[in-house]
Picture 1 (tube, rainbow, N blue to C red):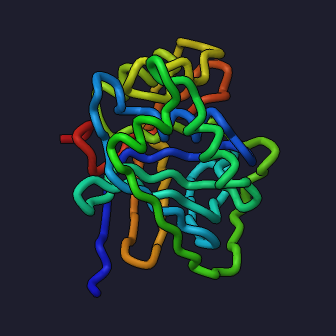
Picture 2 (tube, one colour; picture 1 turned 180 degrees about the vertical axis):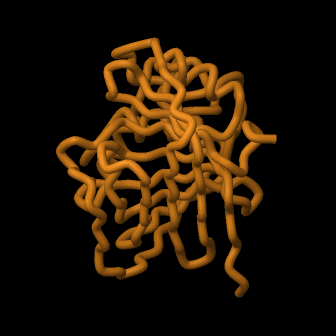
Length: 215
């Protein structure tokens, strides 16, 4: 089977082990107004998402697990996850969050959203980032999401999840960040060539080079 190459996607980066807010946001975003943003998700264990950065003072470590969300068999959201995160536990917490008058899992059951898992069995590759100083990253591929992210939100939908330490951001025109991840069927190569960073230097919003934001 020919490998599918993807250059832009709704990309989520887990900042630290068991980052529940990241899972909660990724699993709930897009379900408002009875919408179904995806119909399936796949857990990818023991993979290598190689993250390359042209600044030594920006710390984003390589990730070693992932979740790919699909709609009509097309990847629409990618979450890259730390090596020691308890993935199933974090997913259960996300699905047990209150949503509307029930819990999110009820919406997943109503829409018959399926899940699967693949183990790539790769040995972990590490970059030079200091994991203890990892910055909160929100890669952005579309205008509405960027608008919400600059207000501190992780999500395009109206949720409580985000980094609200500062609502003032500076534009960084020459910051290069590349994510590269190969799975059993896909190859994600997501490049960024500029970003916004908040004044407290705790939140980074890199702009995807091959997305609607640059056209």
